[in-house]
Image (cartoon, rainbow, N blue to C red; front, side, top):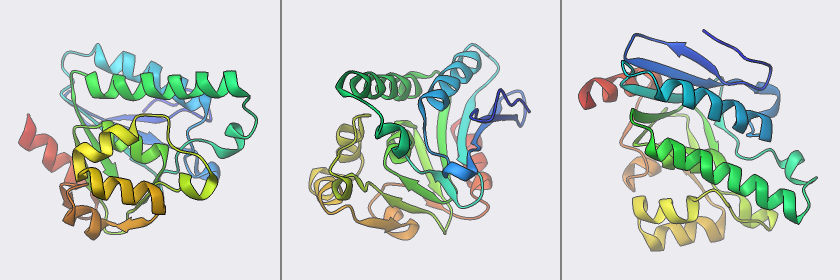
Length: 201
């Protein structure tokens, strides 16, 4: 196990072929700050160079997978820094898309905004029965800048995705399964992810 600092995800090496990245900012509901994005980018760079590693699983602690971008940090951004923050998130999620390992989002709880964008960048998504999905940007007067508007329609269809973004509705894990947002639901969700890993490698 390796913790870089208080805002770093934790990496747990399950075996030579499987690693779990756990998000561990419980006081901030695992919000993705600039520091967290930078730390995650560094972790992925190290893991991607491990030729024995076949699967990377993303998960959270407690009842939150990822709450999305750090809203308090967003409130301090000016147009230039907001653009830089958006591009940083886009680059990171594209790194996840292009990573040579199989990537699985093991969604253990609330999966909101930019957290859902990260899950969509993974090859596969599995969910706990207690998971909740949402993109609340419409209620805040913002829209995701991390690629979710492009990836979500590819997964659940354009009409459903548009409704999802406009209404800021939330989905239960069962609803997410029914529309194909996740491939399976079960607890412990890490076990579901490990099953997926075994089946895909």
